Amino acid sequence: MEEIINDVVIIGAGPSGLAISACLTQYSIPHMILEKDDCNASLWRKYTYDHVNLHLAKEFCSLPLIPHSPSSPTFLTKIEFLDYIDNYVKYFNISPHYCRLVEFAKYDETEGKWRIETTNTKGGGRREVYLATYVVVATGENSEEYIPELCGLDSFEGEIVHSKNYKCGSKYEGKEVLVVGCGNSGMEIAYDFNEFKARASIVIRNPVHVLTKEMVHQGMSMLKRFPIPKVDKVMAFRTNLEYGDLSIYGIHRPDEGPFYLKQVTGRSPVIDVGTIRRIRDGEIKVISSGIKRIEKKVIFENDLEKDFDVIVVATGFKSAANKWLKDHEYVMNEKGMPKNEVPGHWKGEKGIYCAGLSRRGLFGVSMDAEAIADDINGTIKN
Image (cartoon, rainbow, N blue to C red):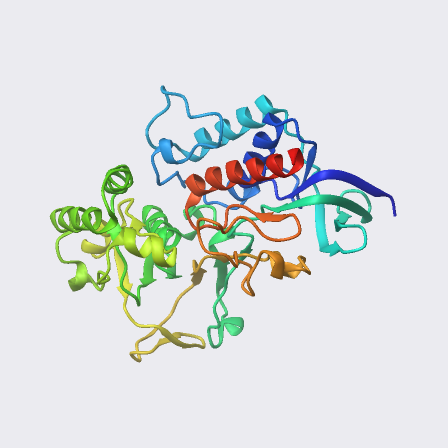
């Protein structure tokens, strides 16, 4: 097999990979991007539901070197964000190598380089080899769907959909739908089902913070000047004014504040798009018990039994980098996440880096990209 040599190989053409490419371009450092899909930002283009929008204000959702236009709205739609991505790629002349499925990446001690073997899925399955002094893992936190073990799920006679593959509720009118998972995806999908006259229920077992996007914007802006405990107190006050006591509907608030939990656990608050009002009105049902097993009916731990036509698994994603990164211990832990704590999480050993794994969204992506490019540039110069 022909060996293609480059200073830097970036694996993944999502926002992280694109951001790093732009920053390396500013330093005139040769590099290439390998992407398994046939487009950039594929999670946004292919694997998000139709009505998804950015939850955070645009000031926290830009990539390095190019802020969003002052004329754009504070909260961007999916289409507006992808337009921004397209312009970003065009401006920096970013040209990923698409349809390159990385089979493995391993550090070659003899060569002192990383060896990456790929399958060109549109080139007749041709194997290709890339050698690089530096490798950046930019496949993100959401590279593979996470499906928990639910007893009997495989035997469910209805339709099973992971949130990654959910697009729109229009074809589910009149159906009984169970959404498993109460993060942002689960809550928004439940709302979308209700919009299209499906009868939606959602499992909410654990305490969760619910905020509006305006509250989150205020909180993130305050964090520039105030400590987390003070900001969380303001959020608690505003939440009480906005929603009151949601426990009567089966939604309980955690003891710790939303921004504290985000920093410590990486878990984001739910940003309400109207789901709470539908729950209050009884249009969306909350089930506060876990699933015991699935037969013809879904049987919950409180012994409630109910028929459903559709189960949507909205339990999130996970990093899958460890499946192909054979020497992951240089930068990753066993779960495919950075082995080092923030803020030094992005740098590994032997010239390997990781980006977009800090659980800080697009804001964290930009910080990672700038830090990685600066470090590579400094190393090359020395």
